[in-house]
Image 1 (tube, rainbow over the protein chains, first blue to last red):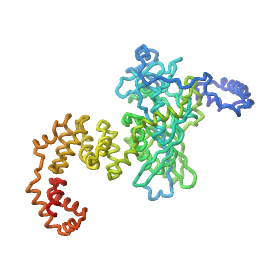
Image 2: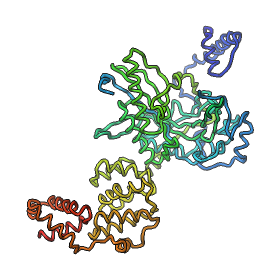
Image 3: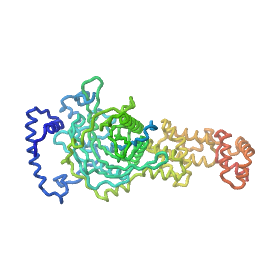
Image 4: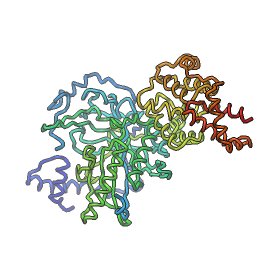
Amino acid sequence: MAKLSKEEVLKLAYLARLDLTEFEVEEFRTELSNILTYVEQLKNVDTDQLSPTNQVTGLTNVMRDDKLIDYGYQPKKLLENVPFVKDEQIKVKRMVG
Amino acid sequence: MMSNNLEFTPTIGIECHVQLNTQTKLFSGASNDARFAEPNTLVNHIDFGLPGALPVFNREALNLAIKAALALKTRPQLFSTFDRKHYFYPDLPMGYQITQYDQPIIIGGKVDFKLEGKNFTVRITRAHLEADAGKSMHPAGKDYSLVDLNRAGTPLLEIVSEPDMHSAKEAKAYAQELYLLMRYAGVTAGDLYHGNMRFDVNVSVSNNRHLGVRSETKNLNSFRSVEKAVNYEIKRQIDLIKSGKIVVQETRGWDEAKQKTLLQRRKENADDYRYMPDPDLPPLVIDDKYVNAIADNMPYSPDFWRAKLKKLHLSDDHIDVLINANIDFMHAKYLELIMEFDEQGLNATRLANWLVNIDIPLTKENKTKIGSNRNRLYKEVNDLNSKGTLSSTNLKQLITVCLSMVEPPKDIAVFAEKEGLIQSSDSTELNKIIEEVIRHNPKAVSDVRSGEQKAIGYLIGQVMQLSKGQANPELSKRIIEEKLK
């Protein structure tokens, strides 16, 4: 398949929140195209008679009852992994103006 | 506003996020009631999206979704799956939302409602289960936001309507009926103030046969704001088109203070979410037997009750009051009380009128303290009333006083006597009034004598008027009949 355009690579990078250099953009134009070409082989398989596979485990209805669960630690413990905490809340870059 | 805009047809579709009435979250065992909790106390590794955490589906969310399907006059899908919807936002720790994309739990259904005497039907496109995101705060004047994940993972059912509405009033009526349906089915606690039901309205206008470009106004949490936001958008879009500009597909928010919608962001394409099946969550597979077991235990619907009340010859307005009061004040069990009266051959219509005119207004003003004893109160009042010794003013007084007590008096007849609310049947005052009414209404009197029952109602009305509501209608009727024999 034809090489991905610069815009397509930049859009994918934006969706993944990746900051690419000019050089990387060029690199990925080729690399991503190669990957897509490789995956495109799947199009040759006849799937008309098959239903989509959502899961490979064969499991269904894995459910729990609607009851409180004690996971064995204080919720506070989770905040220890958070880079910035203020007033027991997760401090992040301002989201709105 | 509409007079010069008649050539434009508005088209409206509504998405509603209904918070399910579960004890725990959709995929974790943390409490689902974040209303009064300290930030980040109802959380665990699943809600925080820590690597390796395994979400496990809450069975009650399935049961409530099935109830929602039945309330929407359809059946749930017997096979449905979960998908990941990817986007980055600080209130979404996993980087994706777990939702249902192409195989949701509900496909189809409808909401019927009445508006200004006309019947409307809005079709339901679909409804899917999904986990809510966290809550963010934006302290004034700071360069940061704060995120509380208590709400992350709260079970939601997103109900998507077809674009079947064409005015702000219809949009509001649809939202109200959907609310009643979900409340009566027990799907949600329906606390609008705490965002238990949030509406997104999609509005477009067109002056030809093609649909116009739509805007979406998100997160409306009252029926009034649904109506106002739709009206605002209709006008904004018509003004744009009339001044030669175009409507752009975008997401807007409702500013209650400014009473207008404001631009939030231009719409992303659906493809940008990169949906994929969630490998952690196996499909839900149910059968008709499972659905039927829930259907057999469905609470009565608003329409069931409306039909019941209609049979009691209540006005549409009174029916509306009762239907709403029944869920606003669930402990009062107004509708059950009426049904019980009816089943026992008591005058249920009269009880309904007492509830609408006396009980519900007082309860709305927080002036009733009575617990589960309404039943006994109204039965005893009804007995007392049929003896004809209570004037209508005194009846109201008696009910008002009793409702304000936690425990009504042991013997209400004795209590009424003590309070001086009982009227003796040989009341000379009442006799005088009735004689006067008979004297002044010869036409009605002769009508009664020739067997016309309606005329006696007229005479009683005159007695009520002359006594300024003090007379007891039952007693008056007996005395009038006696005198005209």
